Length: 259
Image: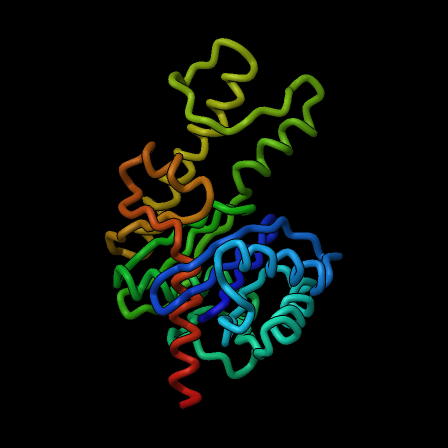
């Protein structure tokens, strides 16, 4: 079985694949001071609860946008599962796509993994929107090349910044307001954030398509993707497991190269 690890700025996702099937999926908050043993003990308990043993895990792959987490995650794989993980971004790890940027080493691993999965599943051209700590827009052409994109503050990050910077504005939860015109402070904040982000999505998609000169399928992923997929017709596909399937495919491609 394959252990796939997606380490983001807010959460780390651990998933176990048996072939194409996800046998278990768990999340932990991202804290750079967590040791490999802390993560290992936690993960071993979850595996046992799901009816799996550590011996069932024979390989691993890691994608991380938090450099300080990579050492602990590598150690976790080696110490608890006796395997050297494939790490997206490491020298020699092949993605099977071309990164058409001036500085390809600066692209977040998660964005490249999403590009691999999106092209594999939907061909192209594509725009992948990932609703994470940041909201990212990534462009994949018809050949599967990663062409760049745009990065905006994530929804929850924007809400927190609004609360912190304005003394009289409370902390509110994200939700879809029934009306755009809020009749009180909280509904007004929710409207500004939610419908403002819908406007951001629609505006950026339109500008990207104009600049690229092509109509594109828009694929949404990430925790808040379902909320926004229902609110705008520009999102054509909702795929919450996109990143994990990208990790599975990259692992396959590199194992084929080893063989």
